[in-house]
Length: 283
Image (cartoon, rainbow, N blue to C red; front, side):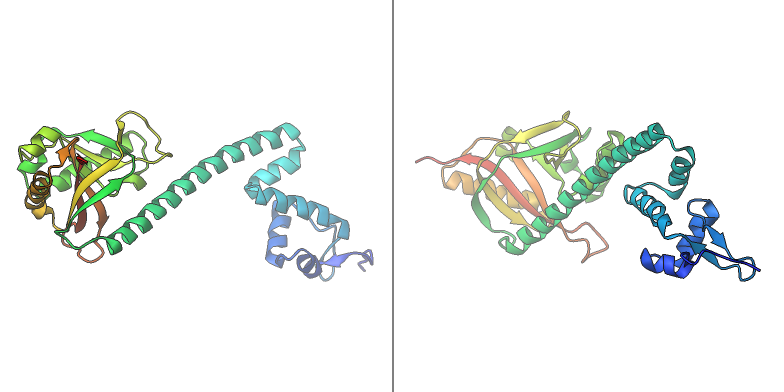
């Protein structure tokens, strides 16, 4: 004959009170985290004391702090405040890393949205504009060859080298987008297509400083193109536009990728580019 305290509650009632499930309570029981205070010897039904809700609340609180059940079990078994503090410090570091990662992803999402919006609002390919562009930061990588002497296949290999370089320096590859190239001012003015560096844009969260430099704000003469193979002809039109308007070129030429449109073409890298050069305008 079995007997139990009339104040005990069934496992189902315990689950309902705590807005959890019976299987969860059974798991806690099997791990020794929260054991029913009474089990009927005939029916094998499990019963809890209402005061055991405090233990359940503690388990849930620790879970919300990011602790795993095995860690909670260890803490509750040892009743060691030092152990609790050590685990919480580790969880804090882990949470901070996760938060930093989420910030990077959020920034990347913002950049992608901005790129799509800029593409939607950009003028048609071939359009020449005069634009004020704010100060920007770039992370540049030196290239051993002048990739303008080759075709887009070589450019693809250089992009992969850039991606490997980011990984080598523990730079999140989420920055691997909107790549650009630089032609020194003198080479651009001579229409000598020479470049030995490729870059990506760096924001305030960029994890390294070596290789990062600023592009000055100012007025830029720009031309838009949507074909990698049209860059030379488009750049020549841009230079002629500057000469025709007596603009003084005062910096390096930049080929900036606004957006990649590979979702529309799986056979090659489809890009929308803004070719630009800083200029001074006589008043």
